[in-house]
Length: 449
Ligand SMILES: *Cc1c(COP(=O)(O)O)cnc(C)c1O
Image (tube, helix red, strand yellow):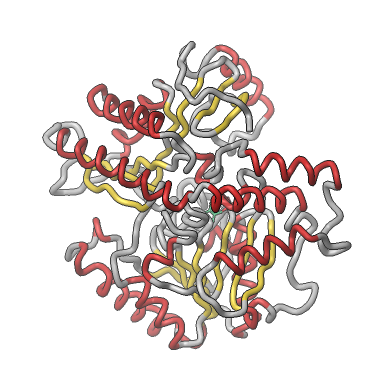
């Protein structure tokens, strides 16, 4: 682990002069379509701190989008990946296999919900895992249709763009998209017309009706849902929604896929977020938090479904790279050793208490309001609105708040279909001092914006 003092330090404007120089080179050499939240160039990162090339130390409430849950240079990840690098970097599992891949598949079988026989296949990115879950479900069911939800996000490849709800920036101008993808309502409690207490059963009934009448249940290969929706705004489907959809899938021979790429691996205070409602998915896709920052993704599920694809039908040159597998084993070791599920729950308690107090304190501010505080574990968000009664989204205030935080040395991200959600994804290993200091900066931003 990089020995980086766990203290915020702002010594230049943010971004500083060296970052600005690098940003100029970047603008000349890197495609404009690849954005950055904050053009501060990283020198080192560890625990809850990102140190930039100008010597500023920023508090990290982003974890590289829910990836570095164990920190960006966790001891066990570095130790195991380094050892693997010296042994060999690659052979291709499809040419001559290696133990690390098998060990990761065994760990996934142990950690994912359900005690049925499970198998896994490993890939490089979340989008690739979702694509492969669709291939596997189609091979198993011999059906074609795939059902996804409003506000859902599943990636940027052609099929996963089709699965993703939001046009700008993910899909705009990039069509045509893959066929046989159908989108149905999700139980977004805060914005459900008849209120959050009705959202679960009503949204489930609408979704089931649309699938039955517009698609035909026996044409559906897979229903894919994020147990806590990530990019769409950290939406926790209202109570009862997930079990109803899961039951509908089971009753109709549809493969139920939980996309836990953002919500998995201790992020929400469970190994997987679907455990909170006792859901056992048929297939589960993972990536992001799995390997402490190294690129790895997986599809894990019922052995008979996973085995439906013919030999040679799944894979890829780099899928389950040995260094990434070593990183995953180090990451899982760290999660168990430090009980990061408990840590995520502690982060939730601290954040929600502080954010609730802020929502009250700034309720009568005439510029913006916190309309909703939600999420679980270290996956927490606030939805900003112009007015609590109309709930009109306030993306401008959200962007201004994020910017004010960045300038004080706190990395925060935004999300949401309406761009009005400020989301917090601190590394699970962040100390309480940094966590509270980050929340102080957020509170300060409320007064200054
Ligand atoms: C990030 C994300 C993906 C895509 O993962 P990539 O590694 O960026 O391809 C898919 N699904 C969910 C829920 C995600 O959060």
